[in-house]
Image (cartoon, one colour):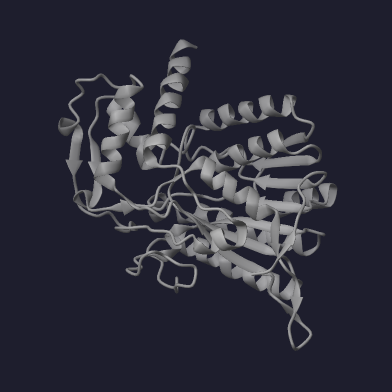
Length: 360
């Protein structure tokens, strides 16, 4: 797909969902590499997981901003607040919008559907409406590998049908892609959706398995391994995700008129995944080894005594596997960081972060 180059320097960039996990790492990367411009972080800092972790990431952002020539402004608020979103777009007239704000989590969506409709659908609609009335060069937004549902064809390609979601969370992400396509077609808004595959790393989301398992093991509790360990995941380290986002930001789908004189939708969707699905039991073994190496757990820790093999849970899928060929073709990038390196960095961070927390 043809792209229109988008320069980042000197631009006003909105990153929603910062200081969330991906958003914080993206903003820190932009602050370190851009030579001029303004970055606006927007997040409601909800308590879906421990807000102290978001406050910690916000401090990292503020630290990076002190030595950056780029101005950073943090605004506490929700994208579901249409008046706020409209006011911010009028005030700052964003050149680039990266919408990462969303209610995440497959299992949480089973018992808390309202927050998914509010954030993932109403909130994203508010962003699209604001982009419609603004000179936005490129809208980049988070989708998810969850849209593939129980797809048995692997690897998952963006050419595959994704009409059978197995969770409300997945359904809202598919809805986002459809809304973005319609706005791209109707209003000629260049938009790119990114289907993330199981993102992990330091200061990640505590509800993700690697993090929650570490918390339980450190507390001497038992971890549940679903589908009796017969699971594969395409784990993607946070630095690879951020590299992919930064590259995509700089190449917007080209605006082209069709034979009828109307815009062809400047719209694209890409997978960002490691491309090497890992067996869940192997992943857990690597995590345990790195936790011992980092001295989070003692060398004689009884791992087998703290594992419980259980059946499949509602909303989950047995495998995720990204075909990232299109990302390589259009942006020259394929995720490369393996689980050993990624989990090593996580374990080191975990030891330091919680040691500092205990010392306070």
